[in-house]
Every structure is written in structure tokens, then in C-alpha cells.
Image (cartoon, rainbow, N blue to C red):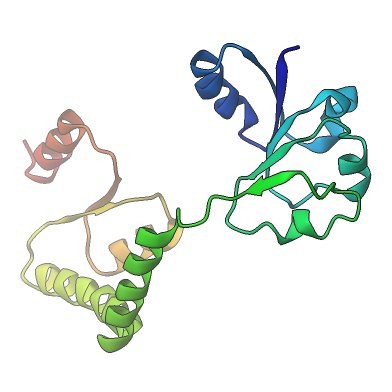
Length: 184
């Protein structure tokens, strides 16, 4: 009898596409949520899912279940299901966030030490101070923004910008605008 792996996750189809070629002897069933699973749960040997959204009623139907691989680091949601048989192996993704958490802790320490919110506010103000200096010196300039925003457009014009361009820019578009500014 072929082993059945049930993947219940928003990205379940991605897991299936990766796993199926590596394990052709396993039937892999992929569903975005447990409501779509139907009777497949009764034939499931392995469940790959987050505990969130998996109910005791759902586990009660999994009479052949042998292993649960939690997609997250916590397994409490599975352990607290009364119908989960004691012989079902539960594993987790413990440790997958280690490097990212270390980096985040370091980043937050630096941000706190350097008063990062104030740094950002200062940068926001300085850009307009520079724009005002260019306007007073009668040097034409344009503002290039990462997004289209009425507020940025209004502030750009208020501080003397000749125009606003939004990223990503094509070289041709930028050169045309520069030629227009120069009156060519």
C-alpha cells in the first residue's frame, strides 16, 4: 500500500511540487485548508501542517496517522488534541529562525542605541532642506520616488522640484525629462 502524505497549508501546492519528484513512491495530497481535505484524512499516514486550524475532530478521522511534521516551531497545538494517539510521532521545524532572530536582535539593539526613529525623521527633513537650497539657487531638480504618492508630489512641488518620477525608471524616460528641463 502506498503511503499518503497530506499537506495542509496555504502554500501546500509548492510543497507538493518540491516533494513529489523526490519521493515518487508517496502519494502527496495538497490542500490550502482542512475544509478541502474530505475523506483523504482517513487514509493519511503523514500530516505536514501548522497546528493552527487543525481540530480534534479532524485528527480523530486520521485513523492511519503515524507522523505529524509541524511547519512551525511549536507543537503545542497538536499535543493538546485529545484524539491524537500517543504513538503518533510529532516533529517540528525547531531552529529554522535562529540566524534571523540573531540578526533581528542585533538590528534592534543598534536601532535603539542610535535612536533610529529620530535618524529617519532627520533624513526626511534634510531632503526638503536640500531641495529648498536648490530652489533658492535656481537649480532645476526632479524628485525620484520609490512609489507614487500625492503627498510626495505635493511636497516635491512645494519645495521647488520641477517634477516627480517614480521608480523603476527607464533611461530613456529619465533622459527625456532631463532634456525637457534643459529646454532642448
